[in-house]
Image (cartoon, rainbow, N blue to C red; front, side, top):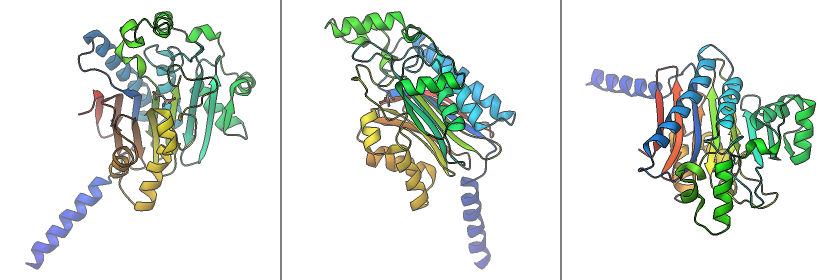
Length: 327
Ligand code: ASP
């Protein structure tokens, strides 16, 4: 009998250890959350899936080769910023005035350092400027003209604002604002309202990094700042977990969402998935947001309550996920 109980205890112990098994590296990314209809055109779905796979491969290769989580997050997000399918960098949504105004942030959890910017209109890859702000300034958060002046000081590429404008999207936006229908119908791209991008990673040296980049919300008013560049709201990392958000920025901000997940883990000693469930199911209302996160063991969580979130993940144990809809 005694032996029986001892073996039960050993099994339970093994299960506990196993749940927190240390992975060498792990990465997950999102390309926005929202409602993407399951009957979306097959070619469009294929284009999103292919781009998610390519983005994942970029970050994964860096981590497999022993590169830093910082490089993996920056390079993965640069790819998504350059891809006009997503609402970040080229392809960003339009403000009420018909402009593209970009927000981004990056955070290094173990160093507890971050860089963020808002309202950039000429920075080709905002995530790279966020990294420069983190690494080369004594500050965390720059806005508008100041962010762009800092880009010049640190050799971050700037472009004519017209670079960000994808003409067919702009035409659809103009016609929608003239009352001719919804942007979605006019552009015939159901993914259009989604597309903020984010990436979180754990590298072989145990560094946790989170990054997010976006054009914000369609028709946002002058000077509106979303959750993405607000450290602790849309982007956060510490020595336990790295988190990136997408969805309705105002709601994400009001729940200080990314930091809420991290502090729930810390103060309740919960595992990542429990803290993610608390944030998405108990703090946020249905249809508001989605999140990706990786913890210091390399556990990954991706969860949305909007119906769909473009997302991908992989780790050193052979995990590979590329998905759009909630399972
Ligand atoms: N959270 C972003 C913002 O509010 C938008 C999005 O993720 O779709 O700026």
